[in-house]
Length: 569
Ligand code: FES
Image 1 (tube, helix red, strand yellow):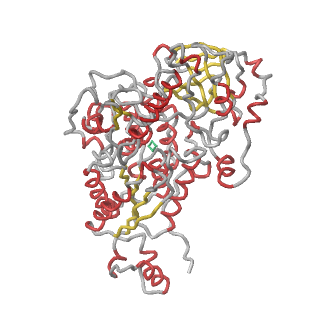
Image 2: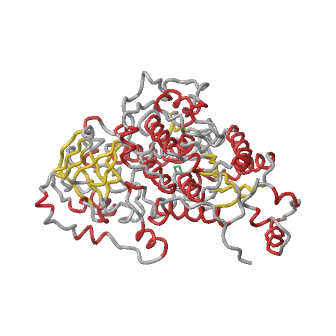
Image 3: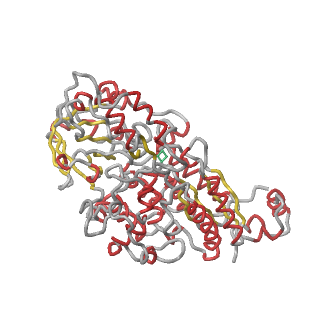
């Protein structure tokens, strides 16, 4: 078996001497003839959801050694969702690009990807898809369930809920602050079916995780067993020559879309899956999510829309139990990193708690997937998650209340004079990939205080940004093209009628074309948009694509491969 790393280490010349000498660190000569396995590790104290990945990496190393490989830990760009400003999404493509380039630049034969917090698994998979070295993911796993006053706390989701309760006057500020210490009970990522949980599970549905291990809670010792076995498997991937392009096929994305619907996963997964597919040059489109996934039953009763948390999900049987229920909808051609199809792992996958994971005959909703909307307000598409929306708002006509930026929204939302009622349609623009920049999770705008005080808990909201996977509500998001890219969202004015028709998949600005043709974007919207002039932000804004194609940079799409670079000595 010819190893890629031999291009650095093989031979008796001066350059091979240099490459080996600096990497000896006490290893024997034979070490340079073994598979060199990188562990791309997103552990960071500033990414608290991934802070435990150093321990996980140790188990991966043990497995790699045991199988005859050499483990090499590679710290890569890490994005902590709660810390990174202006939004972690601004840096996803940078993290993916940096990881891709470091994998390609180094003497590496395969890579184990350690991620957890929202953007880390997407960026790692985008990188692995681009460099196409044998790769597999070890998801870092969710945190354990926190409790406050005897009631479970879902991190993220319950923060939104509790803060809305304070604004509505039904919870004191002091009690709200007391709950802060109870929210994060253990290492791990958010424990709702938010983006991190969704992407960990979808990584398995895509075939890139050791089957049956995604969703294992971070403190559970079985995660270390999975990490150890994944280390062993990484060495086997080299021997088998099994690469991401063999695993990440149309069939595996089909399976991921089915899974996304069945688990009621985050809308962010749409953007991430499109970006990963784009890195492989696969023709996955926004409409595939509606066509493949919208009719799939929702089987998992997890927050933000449901009752339980990831610890319950794992106890109830986890992803294999869900997939067994929808086995007939899966594409049997979808392979996993073991070389066997995903569907091969579903025979012994019972549901242990049918309250958490419903049998196929008793779904929470018969149609759990993402709906893709089009119309004169979203010519390139927008998405809505009906499972997280209010049933009475899925067909709705109301007058627009427009905000030109998130700052404009915060400044005016609680103004008693704001002309808004329960039938209004709140519109927030300037939050797309270019406009913010970075497409932040602001689409689930908190409701105006005066509506909360009247008992209103949901109104239709429309935005060109994203929504946290831990949020809920009747929120139309990822509107494309975004306002800052010349989309018609920039032309909406206060009082315009907007019609949302989720069953009909339409989003309509009820203003005649003739009048729209005379409108120009508001001066307030233009003023809110200041194009970055330097650094990553300028590169990003100059090259980022719209949400309907994954918001990747235009020059990073298409497969590239593990080419060995020129010798520099
Ligand atoms: Fe990291 Fe939620 S903040 S997963």
